[in-house]
Length: 540
Ligand SMILES: Cc1ncc(C[n+]2csc(CCOP(=O)(O)OP(=O)(O)O)c2C)c(N)n1
Ligand SMILES: [Mg+2]
Figure 1 (tube, rainbow, N blue to C red):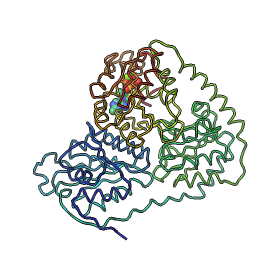
Figure 2: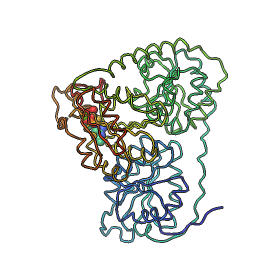
Figure 3: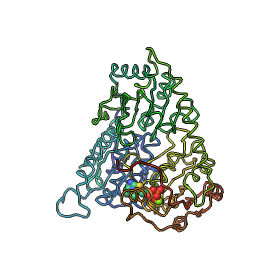
Figure 4: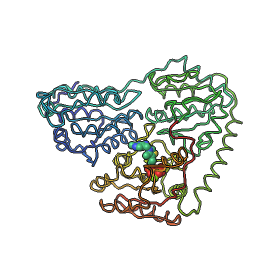
């Protein structure tokens, strides 16, 4: 039976949001969206507010990524919306089901020059799956339902609605549309069978599993497929931790050896982008498993590319009944390479260096992080090291900015993670450059009692840009920051706490204090500015 709802635009929106399992909003105040606040306030719907709209959208994205349900940011008209565009774009690249609701200048005098009168749709359309202006209160429940259905339908992604002032302030009524679960997209069984046969018959197959495996709740199916076909698994993005690190088929460090030696590379739930050499793995055949036909690569031609519900595809792989080659020697070869790399990494992570090298920071962090801790990377080289040295033990515990590579996710992601997991450790790994984008939102975290730990790798430079520029030109510009700046004092001034660490031996006790603090706490680690993450290029 359909439910009839009535009230002002904010109340109508809230009814539809709740029906879809949205449980909070992230926002920065603006008069155009007051009715949304009024509805939330009078109906015990949590409102978290921030100091820059980018943090609201990033917080909503963290909720969407971690909980696999829609995250909501409410932004005021004009500059509120435009400040949210990097967040929306990140969500688009990451396939995160984020809904941004914008205020909008009144329609009845459109063109007369109202405050912040601006048509947002042409700006947001390229980075959303659905963008719509809702012109009457009665139409809001339908529009919210349509937007959220689009956001949650694979390939997932962000959506945008804005409400002219008179639409959201006026009273209306409507039927609340029923919420239908998204039907799984059936893959083509022939393509699935061809893919399974290719993997099973390969001598040296490798799986690389990415964020859509987690988003599509296909982690168990991935494991079943890997175990049944005996294929080593590497992961990226939200796929990290899909197999526990101690699993005999879980690999992280032998990736180069694996991709050099593989005869079949199976990429599941992540694009064939720069992170995966654009899908070019030499002579190896490529199987690209995607959650929707639109995700098939246009720039390379995989051997086969099944498209559809990842659980269905991976389960079909697991149940493959045909002949299979023995992969034991291949798995053993990779295990040898993995173990050797682990020994090298362990030595790096224990290094008694002065100044501190980033590797040591992660060596110390690994001692204090619980298996279910959420780690968030926001920065350049410092975060590349985090990717190398931290091994997420569970899926849904690692948040990186994704292929859009936008600095500034830190405090927003931290807020979304803290709201999602009130009892877990939340640890943001930040470059000192990255800190400049969102550190003011520590104030929001303090005020709303959302403690997190921030570890700054303070090398006094935009390291990931300075080192490559020097390598390319022999000099660098616009790549220096104040050395040894006291970012911990900034956090203290905002109501949190922190300390500066200059010696490796002091790291452990500082981190222990940070996780016990109960307030946002910044550990400002002075790291070696000459230490550059080894990479061929960050532009290719
Ligand atoms: C919004 C945004 N601006 C600029 C860049 C380009 N960029 C990528 S990494 C980087 C340097 C980051 O420096 P820092 O956070 O201090 O980390 P470090 O590399 O020094 O460890 C910059 C400027 C970006 N990715 N995103
Ligand atoms: Mg830096």
